[in-house]
Image (cartoon, rainbow, N blue to C red):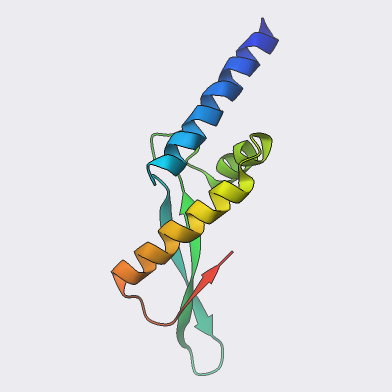
Length: 99
């Protein structure tokens, strides 16, 4: 029974991942990157989060499920897309760094 529960949970997480990607429900947050000399913000690193109410909110869970589901490249592309779009919308100064 435990194995069946694990398979059901895995299937749910796979579907949840597909939903997050399809509907662009990934949220980028931007970490400032500072210059050491002449302290100033030179850009921002984009970090990604799933929705607060999703079991895939945290990036470690999000990317682990993507790896298991063989959707890592698809997820990474979606992350880049939403990060670039949001960075442009916010009109943040400096460069955008994608991890």
